[in-house]
Length: 468
Image (cartoon, rainbow, N blue to C red; front, side, top):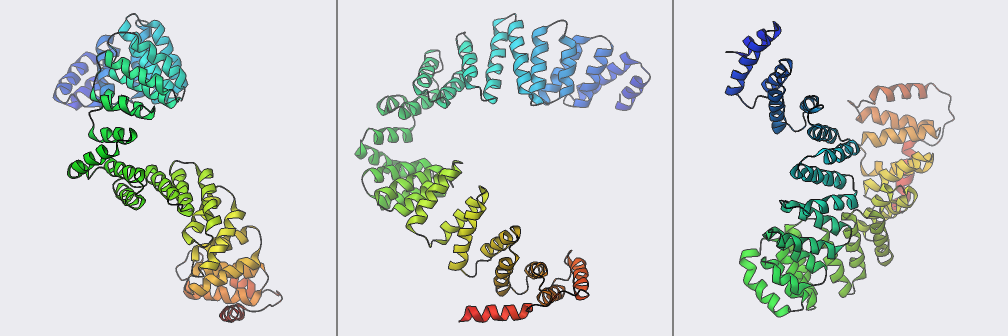
């Protein structure tokens, strides 16, 4: 019994013997997909479609993305079971990310289903496909049809509730979860989701009745303005829940409500340690700073909040408001320059890079950005000015020297360009640009370009000017 024997039988078109050999190999290694494929293929050749379907189904149990298995199962069922044919075709289209085709297949599967369980299974998948294509209303319709029948899974109610939540229909989301509890799904998962929805809907009393989660109970007490009970519970929970981020956010809420804003900020800092870069961190800080009448930090944190949530335009506006209050904060200036550049507003971004370079003469990034921008608009004279400042900060940076030489070359300042190229060849050994600059230097030395002030003269003049 060996793979070579089975393959030899198959090559000799002794398909029955090959099939029996592959079956023995399958018994020894039932997870080998290549053997399952051979068994499926030989079953089809021997016109044993029932066994072929079994083998191809086993392949999909291990590899749900196997297109060949779907195609073979479609061939098997195309004339005998249209429901299964459309299900497998829909799954294949889903694997191939052709979701609209998959939706059409599952619609047909629903119409071809002979039994309720098959129809409900197809409707459930159809609902998930509508979700994936952001067609929430149609997904809701499918899930509603599913929960109208007995034997529905808890997941259908949860999906349906979440879809209503996405559509800002909180009362409908609540109603679905209440229906789930009445239908036998009075699980912790359903109850906690329902409790959270009651909190969102401004009904903390109802949420308190349902939840079994201690932190949610504290949240309910705070929302019911039962601050003393809330802090009493929080103090008792410190040892058990101190490692959980939500615990510190609730303490921050308590201190915010009682006007102790410094302690509230301390709690937010602990929350941030446990849950880095959460939008809630910046939202809480922004609200606290507003109460402290610290408008600058409030705008900064609303900016960070919107940035984390992907609302870049709103974030920029918040940062610009902060800039109006404090125009010399380097971190803020760098953030604004970066965001404006990313959003395509390069001219505005360069204004902030210019401010940065004036506030911090050692900031290389701002000088690099300004030099690149000036080069992009053909202002080589200003490009050279910024590159000179960069050279002053790092005289061994071969890239700066090369770019400076190229800028002077474009300005037809032959002496300065030659000096820069020679300097590059001195410090830039090993650079992929080395031979290119050698060639440029030779060409420049042999040209008759009118001479201008040399690079070293320019550097000395610039340095003396900036020392005065």
